[in-house]
Image (cartoon, rainbow, N blue to C red; front, side, top):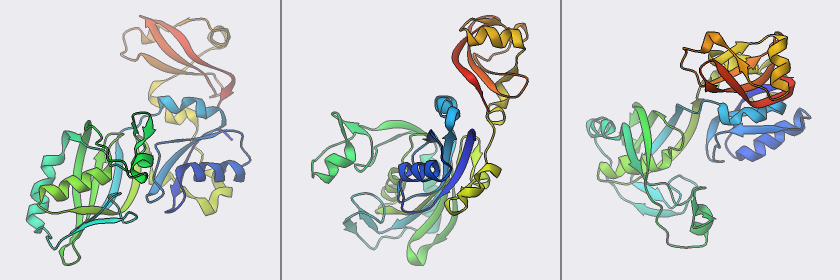
Length: 291
């Protein structure tokens, strides 16, 4: 049971807890996850199973796509409904103003992460310092917002439902805070759901209560890396297993500095890194072909 498994994470458990649950249920030795989801968030959590955990660093991480609720006129220390109230007002923006504000938040922007985040500040996690009452200021950093779309706006209740496609490392809670501030008010994330991560989508996900059917949802390694896959012969396979470079003339002129070498049985033998021209070096080798 190797490859990649998409889980539709429910509200409540952490990403680590979901990973542990899957590991126990499927009796696996190694399970990893790509892109943490807060307990407050639901949706797509991509898991790597067994030998595929060694491929986490190669998974495409962008775009991340979320659907989130933005509730105006209220805010908390965590920038979501789980935190302690820190502000309240009656300023609910007009629909036209909300739509007009979104283009200002697309493209490459500077974003200050929430205090309650896992970012390290002077060697400690920011959320731990925040819980201890320390007054800290996290430096802003660049993120990219590919798109923002209002799916629904219930002005009577002061809540918008927004879809965003963004780069990894983007904090939706900060995005919601900044949109509200640009409209002269305050706001928090009232709901958050991830529906896409790189090439993985929520359509491929299985719910935790159906985890015993996971075998039917596992995505093979070859499919995930198909755009950069190459099938090698036994001679090449033997060289790679001994850490030797191989020559692939067909890729000399192609702009691919990293390839995934599969044997004729569709098992991943090695991750290849271009040395120069048509010569590739085994950056990572699987003595037992990864499926």
